[in-house]
Length: 158
Image 1 (cartoon, rainbow, N blue to C red):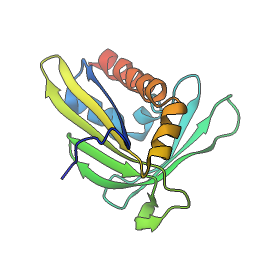
Image 2: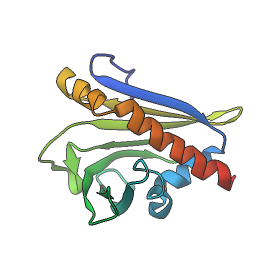
Image 3: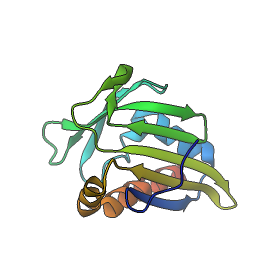
Image 4: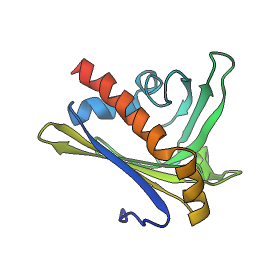
């Protein structure tokens, strides 16, 4: 069961993407496509692991200045509902192993919309301080930017 957002602990974004849900799903689940939009440009993303199954590793690296790639996300998929939902966390790493630093769990939901796909990200935090830190880090700008990059990628392909 997916819970409603708790405004004291969660951050959310949503938008309509003018492309079929299958195109958005593919951009989320194909590592080569994912690398094109997951990190705000001009930074670059590299997918190290994307094992799309519960307990599967989800690891990305970032290059902010065109140099070496550094750790970005090290997490674990919790749920994969084909064409509908992806749930991942950085509280665990692949194989259900506990992570060093738990920060968030994200639920990505895709629903049909008359103009394409209703895309929503619901990001949950363990406490208000983590939520506030994520908001201050620029959650809405960052996650909004990557949602826009995702939209541009799939809309031009559709």
